[in-house]
Length: 248
Image (tube, rainbow, N blue to C red):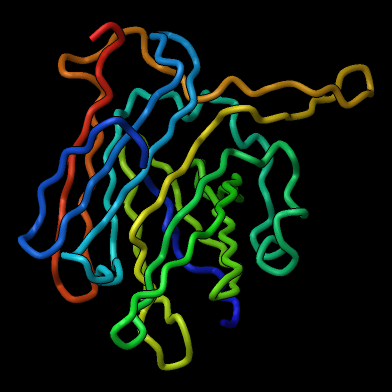
């Protein structure tokens, strides 16, 4: 398949011991979140994702995802993405053009493509970078690479707002005149073992960015995450979960 570039972000959410979901009768969405280590007042790595199923068939293609997360999580003070990766160069040349200090995390996704009576599955790799910020908010770029059975390199873009992320998903054709690609699973890790560089006495010195900051207190019921999903066929699903407070 020819590369699809410059599409809005398919970025957001998966991984936890259990899921909570509410959905229509014919499809279901599950979301999850993990904060590790979970020490209040300290930096952490955030893993979040979603899974969508539709009674054994390929789910319909997404048209929109709306994600809510605790507004007091410290994305702005995380130290992640201190240098932007140029969007046009990432699209044209790949992730090797991105500065080390623009890398924010990684992930993977699974897409499903209905072809006749069969459903073709493909697992794709994701690298997450900071993008240019024209408005003061933290913009992210997800570089998605699929190799088989569909070869494609896609750049997805979005913006992190305090406690809120809205994602518009245009239909993504799998083949000329073929069915749209359906995202059935996505998992992203923000933070983790990343190596950045800073100038010290004229030398590049390696260091590790702190990661997403946790507040000093945990709300009753844990840290909440929500998501609503809209599909191109008009259906909707929603799901909620919470990361329990430490010691609970």
